[in-house]
View 1: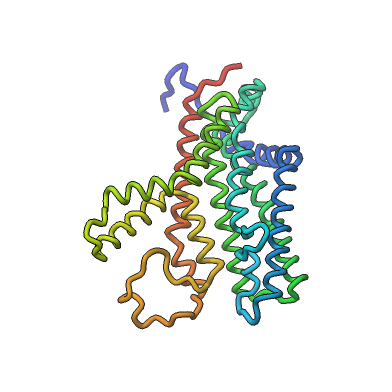
View 2: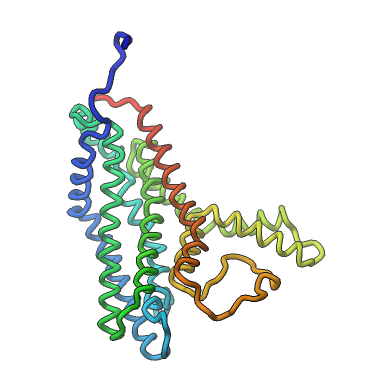
Length: 325
């Protein structure tokens, strides 16, 4: 095999040192003051919302086959937010906090060239940083899930059924996938911008755009593209379908639909439903877990695809950058 003179050739696997980077990143994240503050905030929020939900469930709800799942979705005074609502707000912030300085922090500390001088390729470094932060988030969320489960069993005195445990585990999986999107986005900006403050502000701006402004933009665009001129049902249905399709471009909408289907077995459809589609349906009967999973499979696939696209863009950008000593 002829090799051009001056062309560098890789020796060995490009993933050499991957798990060393993963373990190092996990140790740094789990012991950092930043992560401890975020963990404390999430813990206090979770305990507060779940405790209030338990008080409300014990006072107002009688026999319910899915009593355990109400721990995650019940909102009471004075917070007026459920556990999943707070998670939808805090998870992106935590993921952005773990990823906004993953690469440019190494640039600013002038340690990136030293790391790459070791038998560690850029492939292993980038993927190791991503997996290290993602595993840290997974450990935190899994511990939080165990805390909520134990608190619910202790205070309610009810053992969750196998289907309730499976649904709550799928909710945990959906939350990890949702966190992975914001982590990949933060790392993409960390590669794109050399200043950590700039990458953090860019990631926060994208999160605020989807959390606050996207629904407003969707309603405006749907009203312009599919206006309701004569009040016909076909016009209203076309506008609603377009609005739903555009809103699903937001990871917030995909995550909300997933937790709605997983934690509320009564949900049989996501989006507008015609009366003809309800013929023969037994209303009030909860869907089996397999049907709920089939209902939100496109949303889970969309979240996973978004993570892969963001990470691929980050990988290409990082490979093209020059690393100087």
